[in-house]
Image (cartoon, rainbow, N blue to C red; front, side, top):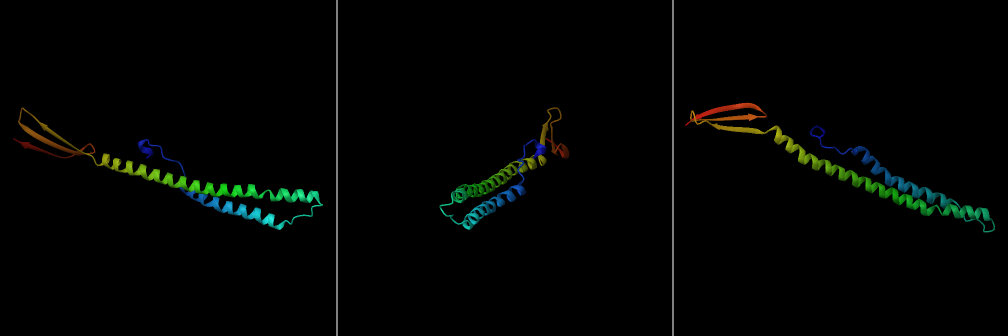
Length: 139
């Protein structure tokens, strides 16, 4: 398609597939990691203010961790949608360009000439600018 001057989408389909597939496991791993850390920490004795503050801070990671996980899964979905749209766009471009290129390549020109002087008619058929066959008909 570059040969006819049409811009080609530069999305690497292999990398898009790999990236799209990697986001969901990353989101799952984030959720599991945050939940695992929080599950291992016991609520401290309220008489220990430093431990209570640490526990509160640690358990507050649950919300941001879940948000990151959700965003990762959404990015995976969006990446896959982009890959499908790019694939569809490329297929659409090919569907339009390749038949048109074939038409141009296989074009046949027919010239019919009639002269008043001789009363003859001639037919010249050429393919891609090269004369393939010619015939003359006398009236």
